Image (cartoon, rainbow, N blue to C red; front, side, top):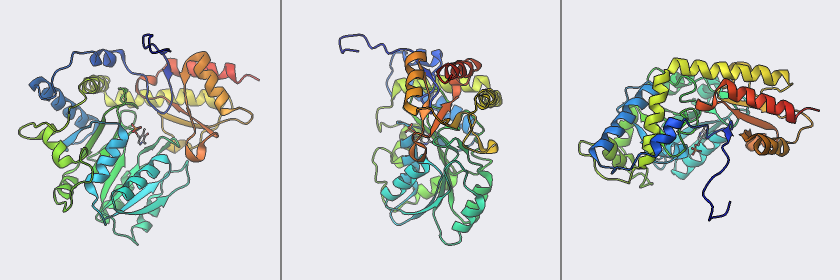
Length: 372
Ligand SMILES: *Cc1c(COP(=O)(O)O)cnc(C)c1O
C-alpha cells in the first residue's frame, strides 16, 4: 500500500481478542456529518449514550458515561480518581490486565497489594478474604473477563467480602460487557469500566464507565488533585452531566455516533438474547475444536463465551498457522499473551463476530490448515 493509493485494506474476519467485526449500521453512523461537541443535538446524543449505558451496565448510577479513549483509559480513570498518594489498593491478578491495573496503582502513588492466582484460573474468594485480614485497602480491583486467559471471574462473593472490609469494589468489564451479564447495582460494583471494540462491536476509541454514589463521594472528598488533567472527573463530569455543559475537551464526535448506534443495536437485540447468542456460538465452536483435539485452558465452568483460550496442539507452529489464517482466509485470531505467548490461541466470538458463520468459517479453515 503506497501513500498515493486509496486506503483499502482487505476486509478481515475479526476473531481475535478485539477489535471485533463492526455492524454496517455502526460504520454508516460514523460517516454522519460532524456537528459541534456543544451543539444541543450532540448533548442529546451524549444523554442518550448515558441512558443506554445505564441499561447495559444494569445500573441507576448517575455518573455513567464514556471516557474519550480506549479501555485502558477507563482503567486509568477509575484508579486515578479514586486513589490518592499513600492509599492502599488490593489488586487481584490472574492475567495481563490485572498486571496493568497493578502498574497503574503504583503510578498513582498508592501502595499496591497484589493477590495472584495462576493464569487460567479465577481468583478464589477465600484468598481475597484472607488477604483483607492483613491490609486495609481503599479499594479491591479485579478483572471480570480476563482476555489473556479466557477466564470468567465470578464477582458476587468477592464484592461482599470487599464491602465487609469497608473497601470499594472496582471491576474491569472490557471484554464481558455486552457478551455476558454485568450487573453493576446487584453486584454492588462501585467503579467499572469497559471498551467499545469487544462485545459492543464498535471501533476502539471510547471507554464506558460507571461510578456508584459511594465512589463519587470518595472522589468529592479528595484532598489532592487527580494527577491526570485529561482524566480528572471533577472536570470531565461537568461536560457530561453538569447543569451547564462546559467545554473540557473536544469529544470524538464520530466515535460517539458509533457508540450510540452500537448501543442501540445491543438494546434492540435485547440483553438476554445477546448473551444467549454468545453462549450458543461458544458451544458450537467448543464442540468443533474439541473434536479436532483442542483443549481449553480454563475449566468449563469458568470459560468465557466471547474469548476462547485454547492450547496450541503439539506439532503446530503458532505464527505459521495464524499467518496462514490471515493470508489465505482473511481470518484474525489472537496469539497468547505473557505466560501464554506461543502456547495458546485466543479466539474471539465478540458482538457481531459471534455468529454461526464465523464459527464455521474458522473451523473449516483450521481443519484445512491443520490437516496432517
Ligand atoms: C482489551 C482490554 C483492556 C484494554 O483495553 P484497550 O481498549 O486495549 O485500551 C483492558 N482490560 C481487558 C480485560 C481487556 O480485554
